[in-house]
Image (cartoon, rainbow, N blue to C red; front, side, top):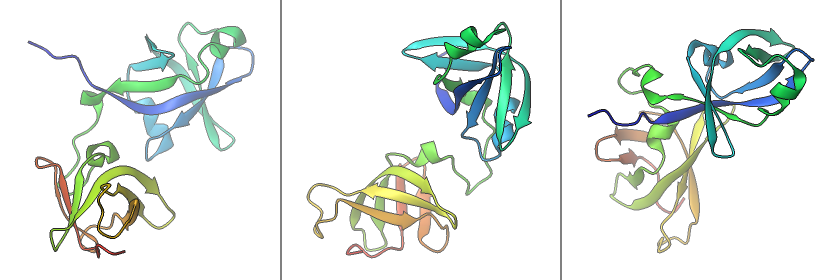
Length: 176
């Protein structure tokens, strides 16, 4: 029995570019151009999903633009603006040990070395120097914290990530 594939959002369609159906691409992949390595794309907009093929793409100024098969004019492209670009999760490469996709960390519980329950990973922010976990504290947090910002720096602050147990152990004071 096959289960339905889980999808992952890799980007979003932006504004229309030109009159021949080209559209701006906002990529969420580490290397923005890597979004074109995944096929096919599933576009999701207002609950409707359609599978599309990228016919052509190129860099434009500091961004990316693409021409999707069958989208040949500005009006057709305009209907797709704002659509999320999804792919089947299975298309993502397996990561080496010790590396994680952000989405794998979301919702994991975070405890410090002393066993203090700091809450759950609510989001991850990219900063110039490193990624930062936004840990939403439990409502009964002893220190009255609503959230904690903990740098995701392995072997310095992040001691262990247990994907199976959905738990991250950090070297971080509970009162900070």
